[in-house]
Every structure is written in structure tokens, then in C-alpha cells.
Length: 291
Image (cartoon, rainbow, N blue to C red; front, side, top):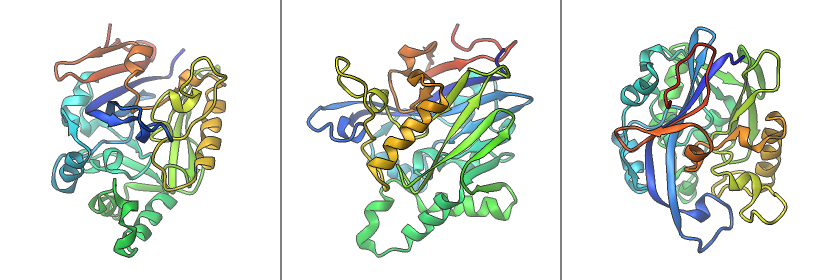
């Protein structure tokens, strides 16, 4: 019995992203598609999301051009795929502050946002550093950070101090400090009251299935960190192991939202914009979006 429906919704993509940015050390291996996605979780009388994408204007548009992002569609268009409007979203878990994950908070006027306090405070610290350290901010829009600070003024921001269990019924947030970013976190949905049906929504702590298994299918599995991190590769590896453990040891239940092969691993369809709608789970009585 599923408590929640869970969909991964592609809202844009990079057609050719260097593999070494996805898998650490995978040099001279060419390019592949990198979807930009967020996650919708619907059930228990509420709608929640993991991340919100970016806003395709101002600095968000500048960063999108820098990374060669294509085919962007608004949350109104994308959420309509599952019969939801941005106004109906009540909770948003922000995995980290990079522009493609935290850049469109304004589109969700009724949502409460959850973010690790360390993630917010360290990006403010990074913005105050000398310009010689500006690489740290290569994928961050300072305006996104300020919009989140204003959410605190509005009473719509919850700053988490580490792990938080049952933020919503059966939904946990786990801190992953000093990994992809200083205060990244992943979200676990315990989707069956009888247990044994966990989904781990990884944010950018893994980009690809190869971060979970290694690149050589003939070799014993091994964890390989993502190609971009302000923390340590060691921390990323142990976080990957923690995610796999929360998924009951099943690496297929750890969901990398930048993985183009998600569409092959789970029920999916391509919408009229050439973007993927991927269905991880359906709550009892919910109609499939991909059947």
C-alpha cells in the first residue's frame, strides 16, 4: 500500500554535458545528456516537491546559457503533467542551493521551504569571500540565496539543523555536510506503512547510476563521487553508502534526478515538449501519468 505518488519531472536539459562532470575522474569520455528535473510527492492530503528548478530570467538565464541548458518549461506547464498547480504545492525540500535546484522559489507562493541551515549560512559566507574564490559560486545565483532569506522573513522557511525524521508523515531529511555542497541533504520517502518501500531522492549527491555502481559492469560494484563538490570525495562516498542503506540496500531505489536512464529504469513517457515524465510510485487510487 503506497502512501505517496512520486514523479520525477524533467523541466529542461543539457544536450551534451561532459561525463567527467557526472562521474569524478571520467576524463576523455565525451558527453551525454543531463536532464534537469525536480520531484513531485503527492499524498496524505498534500503536495510536496524536492527542489524547484530555476526561473529562466535574470541571473538564472545567464547561468542556463553558461551551462547550455535547453528546452526550459515553467512549473505551471510541468506540474500540469500530474494535475498540480504551483499554488497547490505546500512543502518544498531544497536539496541544496545550486541555481537549477533552488532558483525558482518565487513560483510557489503557498509553499513552506525546508533547507539545511548550514547550506544557507555557508553560501552567504562564500559570497563574501574575495573574488579569487568565485569558483565556489560557479553554479549559484546570489539572488536565489537572498530570496530564501526573504522566505524566512515571511515565516515560510524551516532551517534544519541536521537530520529530521517525519518532516511529513513518512518523509525524512538527512544532512550530507561537506559533500556536493556544504549543507546538501537527501530526502527519504518511506512509502509503505508496513515498511520495506523506501525511495531516496538524492538531489545532486549522485548524478548517475554509475556513481552508485561504478562504470565497469563486469567489475564488483563501487561508489564513485560526482564530478563537482565543494566538500570531500570521501564524504560523498560515505553519504552514498548511507543513501543505499536507507534504500534497504537496493541501489535502484536511490534516485539521481540528473540520470537520463531513469526513463528506461521506470515507467515513463515523453511529453509534447520532448521532456520526460517518470513515475516511481503511485498512491492507492492515483491514476498513472504514463500508462
